Amino acid sequence: MSSGDKRYHVIISERAGEMLVQHTRFLAQVSPQAADKLRMDIIEAAKSLQEFPERGSWLVDPVLPANVYRKLLVDKRYLLIYKIKDDTVYIDYMVDCRQGYSWLA
Image (cartoon, rainbow, N blue to C red; front, side, top):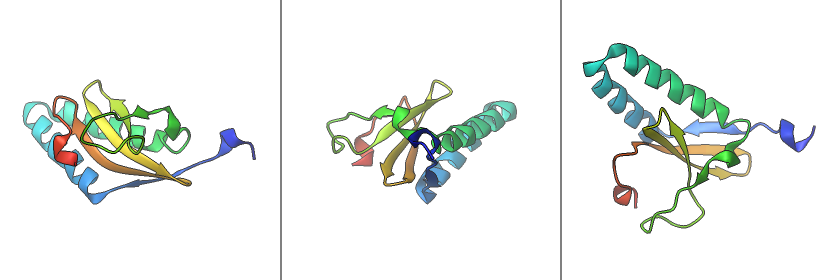
């Protein structure tokens, strides 16, 4: 098995799951179709981290520890914030890019 064949386990935290529900509920008030698309896009993005999680760039913010969290942009507006430990990807947050990160600290 070459290194390119490595598959990671992806674990979505309860908090990130709740954030997804909040974002899709809010969006569904405007457009149920857009909410469904967001939910599916987030699930696909999370699954894609099984193959190459290092592609997400480091999340750099003065309130966060350096080189811990990576980010993956979904639908130009939402970030999956995750960390990689051994062969597992932990998605800890799903945030709207228009928010700051200070509340994560």
